[in-house]
Amino acid sequence: MVRELLARAGLDGSISPEELAPAFAVAGEQYARHWEQRNDLVQDPLPGVHALLEHLADDGRFALAIVTGTARRIAEVKLRRHRLDRYFPTGAFGDEVEDRIELVRLAISRAERHFSTSFPPGRIAALGDTPHDIACGHACGTAGLGIATGQHSVETLTAAGADAVVPDLTDTGAVVRALLAITGEG
Image (cartoon, rainbow, N blue to C red; front, side, top):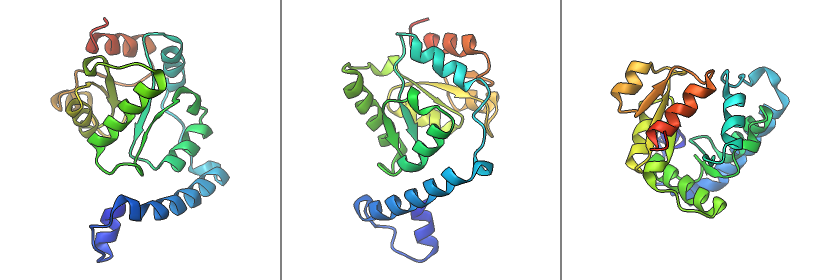
């Protein structure tokens, strides 16, 4: 998004991530302060997300990490605001790597380091609500679980190649069964 804004302003799109880092840091802090002060800007988490994450965190078969295109500082505020931060001890954020596939790879690498284990790609599931989320996970060798809570339907996510799709996160058992099935655990 930052590169798009720079292009619209007529600025050279070849600015390196290192050169953009200070701008991301300042913007992230400003945005975070704004979010921390404005309850009316914060959307509620998806129905079922707390129960699902609690279950996955307590189930020894799962190790959780977050991958988001959102800048780290902004994501931290959002996660903390909804008490979701405790479920994600590691991950990768949009201000760290521009390429989404590399972002997934970074999150996997950090998760392996954090949990002191190697995760075979077929045993990793990337959850997402867009065809792009599924494609990025598949490019890294992960299974893809589509969550049809956003703009994309079950049919769209299935057509995009999701290994399984759930309509939402309200049925913890169904999500867990889908995760186990697509990672060879089920």
